[in-house]
Length: 102
Image (cartoon, rainbow, N blue to C red; front, side, top):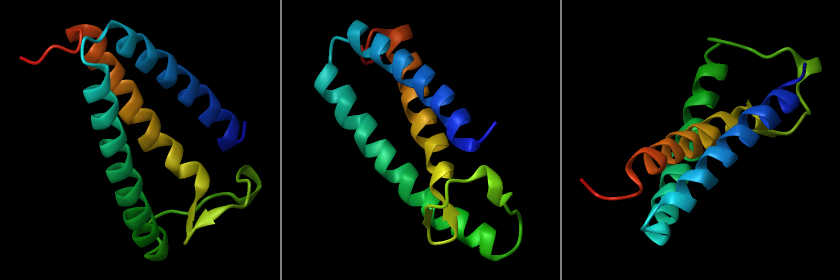
């Protein structure tokens, strides 16, 4: 299984959970704004720290499992995980709380 196939599975689940949470939420606009802001922050941090870790030799990827697109040294597939995490955790929060503030 390639990273792209694995990412499709994770992102699909995350999108469904987020959509369910958003549907249940009473404050959709605020939720979407917060998710976009968190996603931008996570993607920027992933770009920085993945490049540092790869450059320092902490880990490497098998080339045959990647599609070849990179942001610096970080393969584009690596960016699906923070995006999925933000969507999944935000979706769970919205589902469990209804989007209401404590």
